[in-house]
Amino acid sequence: MSKIVLDYNAAHKFVEKNKSQGFFWDGWTIVKWSPSNNGYMQPNGMFRNNKWGYSNRYNLTSSGTWEISDKYAKLI
Image (cartoon, rainbow, N blue to C red):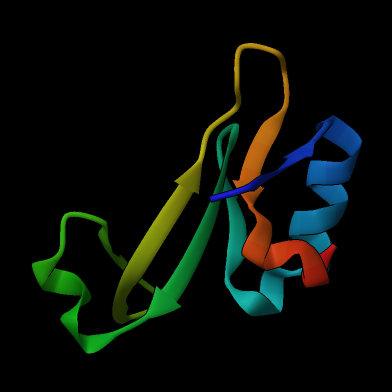
């Protein structure tokens, strides 16, 4: 799977622009949350906004960037 590399400014713009798509910050980690009733049974399950769902976490790399899935390229 290909990745898109975001620097500090691009990452902040991306998350701000896509909050309605389920993106938010958890410290220095970008999180993508998608609601699902089965989220409580999964290792990446997360309870958020009174609902269960799945979360994908994109951690800050040692080079000071974030690498997100290229499937979100249209959201940049």
